[in-house]
Amino acid sequence: MTEPAAPEQLDPEDEKLVTLARATRARTQAAEGAAVRDETGRTYTAATVALPSLKLTALQAAVAAAVSSEAGALEAAAVVTQAAEAAEADRAVAADMKTPLVVLAALDGTPTAALHP
Image 1: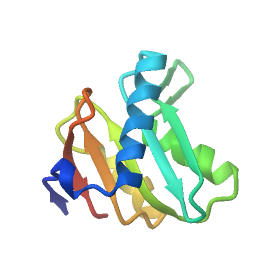
Image 2: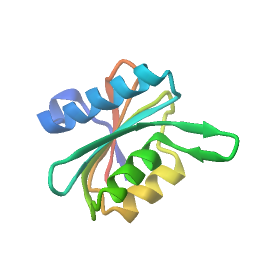
Image 3: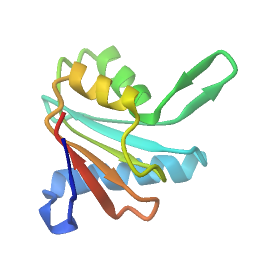
Image 4: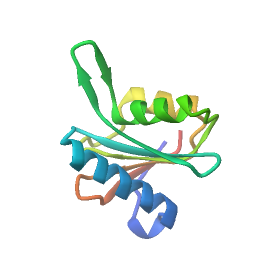
């Protein structure tokens, strides 16, 4: 399910994820940036990985960082992207991690959609 997200609907912790995702994308000049918050409140960020031998969306990379630090579930995630909707791989990894909220945001950080996988 996808619902439009207005900035006033985001809680401050979710806004922080958008800011972290945006900063990660800008710093690396990647196509996307993502940030996730695990069930203990720890945050992880990542950018798109586009190597000849490895391709990951930013959300997949952020989830990999969280899982490698023993996160069992995510409270929320944010993806800064030019895409109009979430990639199928992002929907799948969000569902795997029982993520109740994935915020999509434009490159300027404006939320464009809230996914509830």
